[in-house]
Image 1: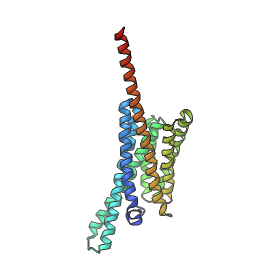
Image 2: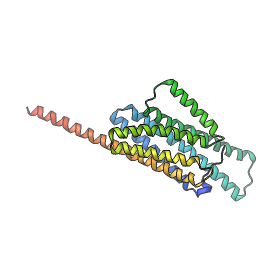
Image 3: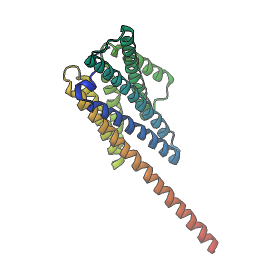
Image 4: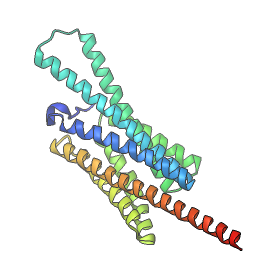
Length: 245
């Protein structure tokens, strides 16, 4: 497994950002589900599931950081520990890193399937197979995982761009901007091994991208509630008119 940059490198700033990203992505999933309940559009329910998977992935990334912090503390205080204990910490770190990549990839693939309207089981199986292959190869070459996300996000953005050109609203622009920022964050992650600061920049950009998506989901929910209230008022108005007659 490639070396990970974390708490020891940026004094915990990156870990704080990851916790915030977890919270924001979880809230995005929550609001997507709220929008689904209002609009009854299955697309938003699937979006909710995708964002939930991404949120869960960040929980495992936080666990990876905690295991790294634990090892740093042990080294600095010169505690005598058994080799088996250190191996257990390494195993937790390893499997947490794999699960982080697995849930993250599943989440983005769900968003990809929904937006590209991929319903063919053969295509889904192929993408899932390539996803498993990506996770396996990224154990040795971490950049492959981020490169795969760049490709998925690039295809997603082409669809969001077409959607923006067709409807040209603040909502479609916010979604396009949010995913574009997340795409740029993954490009920075590709170079984290050679330029450590790019890791922190990538973390910040990902958080900003999810904040854009959260703002959009909240806005959609509020707009739909207002539309429902107006429809109810019109319905009551029509009933009163009929009763007056």
